[in-house]
Structure formats: structure tokens, C-alpha cells
Amino acid sequence: MKKQAIRKIVLAYSGGLDTSVICHWLVQQYQAEVVCFCADLGQGEELAGVPEKATRSGASKCYVEDLRAEFARDFIAPMMRSAAIYEGYYLLGTSIARPLIAKRLVEIALKEGADAISHGATGKGNDQVRFELAALALAPQLQVIAPWREWDLSSRTDLLNYVKQAGIPVQASHAKPYSIDANLLHTSYEGGILEDPATIPEEEMFLTTVSPERAPDTPEVVEITFEAGDPVALNGKPLPPHEMLAELNRIGGRNGIGRVDLVENRFVGMKSRGVYETPGGTLWYHAHRTLESITLDREVLHLRDSLIPRYAALVYNGFWFSPERGMLQAAFDHAQRHVTGSVKLKLYKGNVIVAGRTSPVSLYRPDLATFEKDSVYNQADAAGFIRLNALRLKVGAQVQKGHG
Image 1 (cartoon, rainbow, N blue to C red):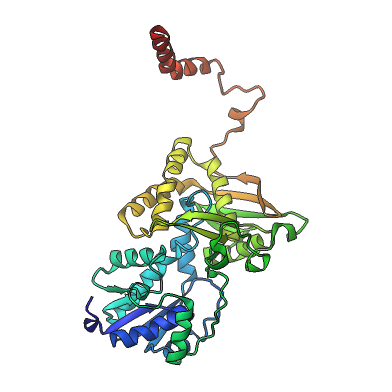
Image 2 (image 1 turned 90 degrees about the vertical axis):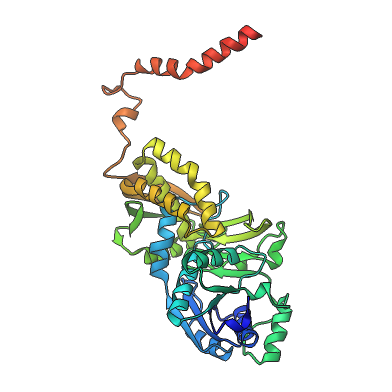
């Protein structure tokens, strides 16, 4: 990459130590104008002073945009309609945020007439892949600068020494027991003391959930109503997706719902330990799957479920804007047309218990499923059904017996 060819760079900026150093470093190394972009995805951080921090680090301007509604509607909701879960546990809270950040980063870069975009992801993690795959899919003409893969800074101590020498006003210290990333869907904790998978996280670490032991002694019941696979009302009150998820976070959090501790397989090849809080997303996920049990055809459900690992891996690995993710999404959304109805969940000390489900298009027929006398099912039909399904097994057994 020719540094002298780059005149303007748009940086994905958080206001923290890493991106403050990157902003200043880009100005110095590339002699380019740097425009910062900070996305509000519901992380709860104080964003009011971010533009000032960016300009003090050398940026010419800083965009701060509230993307919570778009995040929930156009990214979280499609993923939840697909019942995506990575390696059996992870509800993809960080993964699903990256394509939206990259999308808006590219849009601002094109608006600003920039030559390149930049991010603060390290060369070891998944985020570098997610940001750059999205950018290449949306605007391949833009160059991508990843300082962690270029500079000679290699630790938090190096970054702190850099800001001290450069006179960048950043509130940071050497003490960093773990890394936190938060948005509307989840809060993640990685690195530091958590790198030892035998270490039990301290209770004080968790920001959005109480421990199951400290949750109320009385169960709480919530009702979530869906239309075509998307939640539209909570306890009878209509809510847009981002407000729905925010309220579900509060409800799930106070009941100790949604904690996950796992060692996952990163796309770059290494294993990584992560601890996640996804209270609202856990309630959304369980309610949705419960409603599917009475509204989806058996073969459609089984086929979709067989494709969930592939879809989840696409999201995790950064292929949100890939044609194959789009193809799967179209198929999954087609299957969701009749996932309409309501689900009641009983929440108790970290447990999510189904307390009822109803749908105007339910495929569940009590008159067919009953153990009592009925007039709609001829039990004698089962004999022929079994004989036909057993035919290949019967032939195989006879052949093996003959050769034996």
C-alpha cells in the first residue's frame, strides 16, 4: 500500500485508548486527513464527548450516529429469524454488530470522498476479518488500513507510552483485567484474567445480569407476540425491535438470564475463551423457537435446523454480505411467513421455562395428538407405514443372515 496515495481516511472510532492512538498515528504516518465514525449500538457508553476526543487525537471531524433501530431491525431480527447460534451456545452478539458498523463506515467514506477506511481490530481476532470482508463486498475500491498489523506497538503499555509522548488526553491505566465489548444484544468479556479457561469470573464483572443465586425468589412471566418470525409486542404492548430488546434485557437481566461461558473456535484458527451476557436475546431466541414448534412444518423445521450451523458460521466469520448468506436468509424468511402467535415464558433464577404458546395458524391438532378416543386417525394405518419404512432394514438383515 502506498501511504502517499491516501489523502483521507475514515476510522471506526470508539473514543478509547486504542482508537485514540490509531487516530493520531494515522495522521502522522499517512499525512492524511482522518474522519472518525462512532456507532451507538446500545453500548450504554457516554458518547457526548466523543467528537471532542476525536479532534484532540487529530481527527478533522467525527460522526456519532444512533444506529440502534437499524441494528435491531435489519441485523439482529433476520439473524434471530434464522435461529442462529454458534457452536451450540453463542448468540453472536459481537459478530452481528460488525457488518452494520462496516456498512456505515463505508457509506461515510464514500460521502467524504475518502481513499481508505481504518479499524482498531488486532491481527489475532475475528473482527479484522468481519470489517474487511464487509468493506470489500460493499466498496472494493476503498483501501483498508489495519494499524495493529502495521505498527511496532504491541501492548497496552506501548499504547499508554504513546499517548503520553504524543500528549493525547486519554483516561486509561495499566490495569485491564479483561476486554469488554457491549451493544444492544449482548456484553462480552475476553482476554486478561479470562484467558485461563479454568478461571471463574468474579461476580462484579457482570454488567447486565444478576447471578441466578441473587435473582428474585418469585418467578416472572413474560409474553412475547410474533408476526412472521419477528417479535412485535411484549406483554401485549406493541414495541419496535430495539425497544423490545432493551426491555427484554432489563427483564432477563434481573432474573439472571443469558450468561454463557465458552471456549470458541475463531475463524483465524485459534481457540478463544469468551464470557457473554445476552439476557434479552436469550428470551427472544427461546420464545421464537417455541413458537416455531407449533407453526413450522416438520420437514421445513428439520431442513432449516440442519443449515443453522452454516448460517451461524457465516455470521461469525464475517460473511454477512455474501451471496450464500443472502440465499439462506431468503429461504429462512420464506419459512417464517406463518411463525405468528404468542409465547409465555416463566423466568426463574437463570432458567427460561415455557409456560404456554398459541398461534392462529398452529399446526398442532389436539384431536390428532390425543391419547383419548378420536375419529380422525386410523391406528391400523400405522402397520403398513412401519412395514414400508422397515423394508430396507428387513432386506439388509436377511442378506447378512444368509452370508453369516
